[in-house]
Length: 169
Figure 1 (tube, helix red, strand yellow):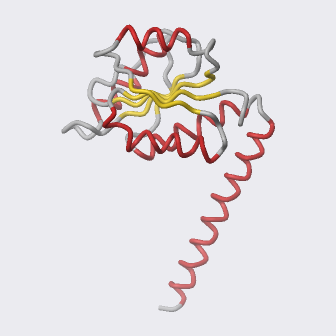
Figure 2 (cartoon, rainbow, N blue to C red; figure 1 turned 180 degrees about the horizontal axis):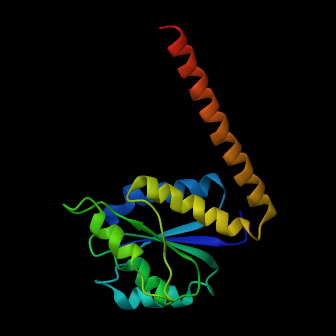
């Protein structure tokens, strides 16, 4: 496992299905991670305590998933100097648009890297966390290069199949 670990926080246990995507990516890259439910509104003291002690507890990146008002990532970012990645959840009738705006619209000085809404965003949050950790970990950087090469090869294969289908028409 890598030298740094990643915290995955979510406002509710109902977010687990989506946030598991981030954990799956981290596991694929053999990056240690912990998953916890912490709510900016229902347990603000716990959020503050976790975020303010996160660096001392060995975390290097924090991924936060939240729906609705989606204040978790911003509150965490206010209490730490670690990079925070926000994953907006599509848990309301607004389809995640409210969560996206709440996560991305941070005041100057409190940055939150915001990814797409839902599962694609959670997956990208995991990859972004790996990229951040890879800045100081050559082995992880190599794994990322291999990952990107596999993505490229996947596209080549899909295009090859498509071209064969088009020619057979």
